[in-house]
Length: 581
Image (cartoon, rainbow, N blue to C red; front, side, top):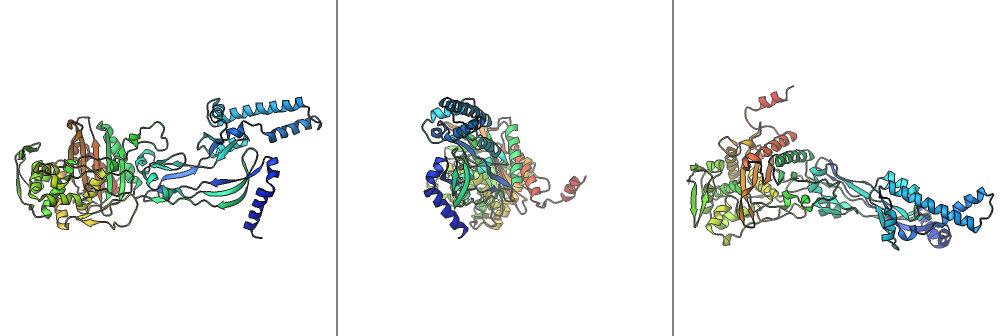
């Protein structure tokens, strides 16, 4: 007979023919589930971001626990008889044995509470609250060593439930991405939630023999083996994620800001290499945390992008031949549009197209926008993904807001050119910048590792994208608005943004989003980075002074981590000298 056949026969024999025999000896056959191992979440290089380890829970059956353990009492009586020369016990002696048993049980309850670090009397309180019930937790997800010590107490009605505890090695650095699971191992937020079906696996089942203490004393047969969950390989590079987290945290603290978000994209594939937020939380210790800390601002919260969208206005106007690179635009500080005025912070006089970006002239881009047909201008914004979900697969990701073209007045179109009247998330803005970084090709974004982007589409011609990129390099000069964004050894193209925050009663005079969006190396971009600092309040609030330095540190570090060769002339000797001892 095969091994499986023997097991089946034995199971039937124990379950049907020997059931009464086993019950007389307080043993019985039962079916228990076997928890499946939850899949690992790892970064693009195989570094674990979320793993599961054995963490059994201790349960109690109040209905059984309050009963006297007849089997144990009989064993104690047998030991007592042996001391008396195997004489029969009197009723008084039997009561004495029961009294001794109950005292030992009280002692063991105290030992149990101590092992589980429970307050004195907690077990009795649970027994009272769950009186007549068949199940209650004493402690969830403890160490296997403690569970073995609990088992050794041999308390009837106390059982060990096989479970796994989720552990996040990177803690708060990646918390907003992977999220966390509950005590039952079910994903609650983040990628743990959106990929629950993939990660969770399928529990198995087996038939066992339990003793009078409801502890498993023997396996009979496997009814179904557990199927472990599948691993999830993210696009995230843990090295860049940590770098971005550190620099964003430093910037938020230094500028006494309310919050911040930073996104790093691969310019050629749209993969998210880093997405960090401040403030963050520790997913390994979630007690007493406010729900607001769980928000992944980089994907689920919106802001008006301000001047960071100006390169797209220039690209749209060049692409449609509504302007030429050499055109001169008069910006005299104030530009009337209907009953409203568009203003610049300074009177820049007459600027060429590159000068409009370098000086971040609202009047310059407003005049360009008004030259373009409304449907064409808004159509370019739509093609860049504004107002549409980025479809990254992250739960709760936002689509942002893009106004309807036919309802827009001239002034609405003018302010749209410098980033008001629409809103978006940091990842949406970063995605739009891939159209400038990859020679006119807009990439979809992905939180999962991939080799190519099959959903990429062209928005601008290669000529237009390269021309605008070159213009954007002028922003990273002493004459531009983002000299602090420069990266030693690399050409950088980018754009600052300082957007007023909208409230219930209009725009605040003192609350801003400090923004910077950029790419490098400008000659052949590898990375796109967007930095958003919410309400800096330490004195400076301009994107070029608050967010640009963060961009510089993260971009420089990331390019070196990836081994991207410098593209700035006459910098190689300097870089080599810095590496020399």
